[in-house]
Image (cartoon, rainbow, N blue to C red; front, side, top):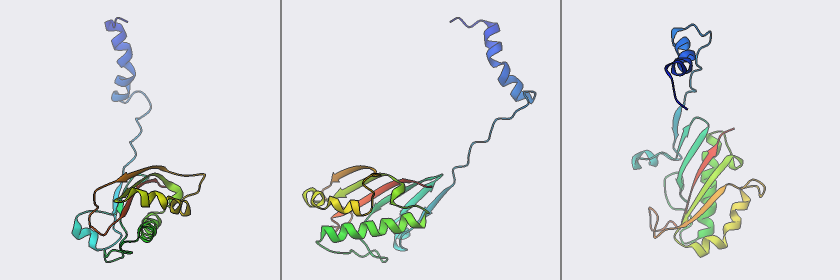
Length: 160
């Protein structure tokens, strides 16, 4: 299609009227994307990260590890115990942000021992409905932040 001067003017006319205030309507304001952070424990601030960041109606949860409120490892050498502790910490973070596991859209599980994690994968079904499972990735890594950590999970959730 060849754009003649008349076509260009016609195409720009509604925008020109709007800019001039003649069009009778104003462009809607873009919704604000409020950003807030959440810390599961006081130790996190000293380590330089947030447990979760909320942007609009989405919450991004950092890798959650099997630690207590002081950041100490729970269930050394026990993948099942560590996975349970991780899901407990995730539940706390979700609840503090007005959500639950039913709001999770993406789950990434990191482990240093994939066969052990796969053997315990049914533990996930204790927190998720079989009819509402999130997109999930299982990733084996050489090691996590501390040699005692066997598993860590990060989530993305859409808030209600």
